[in-house]
Every structure is written in C-alpha cells, then in structure tokens.
Image 1: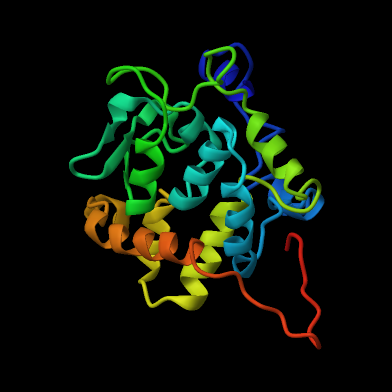
Image 2: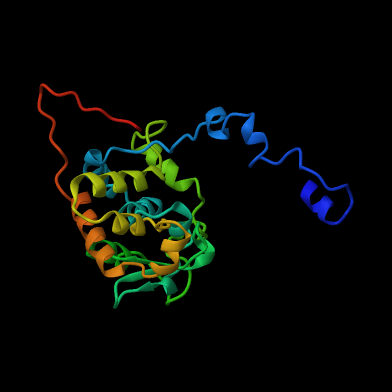
Length: 237
C-alpha cells in the first residue's frame, strides 16, 4: 500500500518501512521461525488398506466421496464439486476444471478400475449434475461430511481427510520406483522453478495412470498384520 502511494506521489519517495526483502529481513527472524507450518495429520500408508475396509462397509454418499478422494489422492473441494459431465467413462479420466483446482489449472485424473466401479454404482440422472448428492436434501454434500465420516471411523483428532494425500505420497516415494516428477504430478504439484515449468508442459498422464492403478490396488490389498510382539502405532506424523 505504501509503495502504491509512493508511485502515485501521495507520499515522498523513500524506503517502504514495511518492506521485507532487503530491509526487515535483515533485522527480523524468518516468519516460519515465528509461526512454523503445521501439516495436516496423516494416516500412515500401512494403515490405509484396513481403513478402506472399514470405509467400504459404510453405505453413505459421503463414504463413497471419501473413498474416491483416497483412491485419486485429490482434495475435498475437487471431489465434492465433481460433475458427471467431468467424468469420461470411455477413456477413464476425470477432468477437474481450473476453477476448482488450488493451482487454477485444469487437471486430468486417471480413473482406476476401482474408481470406475465406484462411480458406476452411484445413482445419477442424465449426464449433468453433481456426482455426490445428499440422499435426503438432494443437494451437494456439506464440506464437513467427509470429516464426520472420519470421526465415525475412529479418526477424530488422529488423522485428517487432507492427510490422505500425504499417505499416498509417502507410499509412492517409499515403496515404489515411480519417478519423483510422476508422484508430484499425481498430486497436481508444480514441478521445478519457472524455467522447468516453461519446458515441462506435459502432465505425464499415462505414467500417472500406472501409478494410480498401483495405489488403488494397494488400497484394496489385505490389511497389514501386526505380530504379537509388535505394537501397532496409529496417528498423524
């Protein structure tokens, strides 16, 4: 605001006393040291298969929305606003418009066979309208419905809905050989600095499809068994 006033000659030229770079950063500690970033609590990927068994036992629209969110490693807003017109059953792809993406860029989500099966079982009328609609009100699901499902499954205060993106990323990085760029692209994360972005314009879709199919298969795998002399750890990290 002060810079704006200087440019328009509402105040005399000079250093903006509130400027950070090259000014206040020389005498004050970095903001992150004063207010460290707190990450969303995430479920360990070892616990995801068991969680999915419990989740699939719940016959609610919100449970199906959460299931798709986990399988696609997307954000809540992207799932809750999903339209049938965005789903291509032939090519098995879900195209999320830029308006609903955090990065404001259209994003193509490869749909695994499990995702296709889930979507085909949902009630629908025509090719338009929301994919996930509350059964009684026939309106869009409230954004708190997914956390409520988590609460009913014993995750209140332990893990979060958004944390499943971290569960997926840890699984991909620690247990698979998929390249870093593919794993990051699956989360719709930017790859590299401005120069890299200028040249890396593809979305690695075909490679991402293989990754998401592997994740879907892992989510449907038998839950990890813990031996009697090992204590199972639960909760966020």
